[in-house]
Length: 266
Image (cartoon, rainbow, N blue to C red; front, top):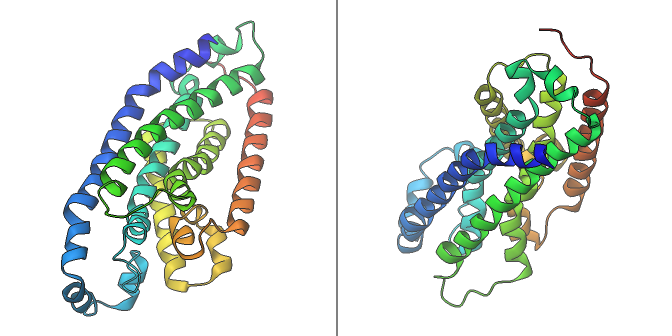
């Protein structure tokens, strides 16, 4: 339990600033960008029609379905999801590579507690941080994004839209943990997190351009993408199942590696 509390305490400050930044970004989309779409619909359509279709598709612009609160949120998630992904990788790598970076693996492994317990305490700290972060995000999003929309009703679809960031974080959490326990040296948490985020964004943009559904399995930001909820009323079941399998495989492989890895002498 001490390991859990220690790790949670160490990441809460970072988690808070990430959450604050994401909420500010969402507020900018809502207070500055969304009203422009509402007030200048036809003019914006004419403006965007001057851009190459490939450019609009790559960056998530769907002019046929972008002027409602839920479609606009799905569009915003193109960028909010990127921030959530980088946050998830950053926190998970920070927690699971702390001893490697500080060259004190022998210190924690010498404690009278099994490696599997250490692993799950660290995992619990990550998930707790994400839960707290997403509770704040959901509360703020409901107030600043949906509450001011006249006649809008909070539905099951809304809940799915607001829970998409958490599930996306769990996917990238599994990636971050796997990298942390697999790499022998972790020199920079921010570099790894940023690399994952940039690659995920590029893959999502590429999948948008190619418009092949089977290729969405290669784009982690699409697994719980709100656009599926907006169009179909729920997440894409195939992508959800694939995400669950991917998370399970990553976690199981990282557990095996973490529990059997030899401690590098310093």
